[in-house]
Image (cartoon, rainbow, N blue to C red; front, side):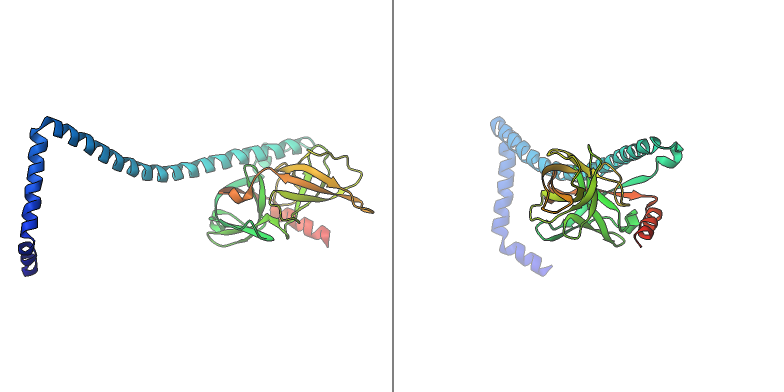
Length: 276
């Protein structure tokens, strides 16, 4: 208390000056029309600027919530489209009960936490994990095309082995010709992949589109990959080396979709047994 009184006494002249200054401004503003209008205009500009900044912060958080909501809705739409495609192909050979055929695949939306893009073996990390239904071996794609395969998972995070990785092997199909091969990345260009093991008697053309074949447990058929930009046939080789241009820049990824196949374990067991 003594220190407070000492402080007031020490700065009493300044405090009195400020008090009288405030009184003066009050009297000038309230009893002079022009000054009152200037004050009202200036205060409106100031409060408007503050309100705009506060509103911008609120819009940022609302936009994030809206983006999450749109991501979920997109996932549901993609899930419906993928299952419809698969069901249509199956029904061409055999009649399936709708209840059994429409629930083959489910799509889980996820946000990218981190990624590498300039290494020989690139990975990205998702902000979702085992608690969200993500498991090792599931395929990951964006709205423009495939991204990679889940390599490892924890409770809340998952690591994706990207297609821009020397260890990546994904089965791809030439849509118009129905030939398939293994999609690999063996260059330093993040916009180009190579489709190998397509037989040399295949009739292929530059511009043919490439999609997933559906032969693996990670991806259903017809997830878009890219287009053929060039192809070569080495001397004595029985298969083409096909250059594929991606239509999306993986360095700009923010959101992806993880696809789960409900019969993946059963199919994987049969694949492993046939390889023995």
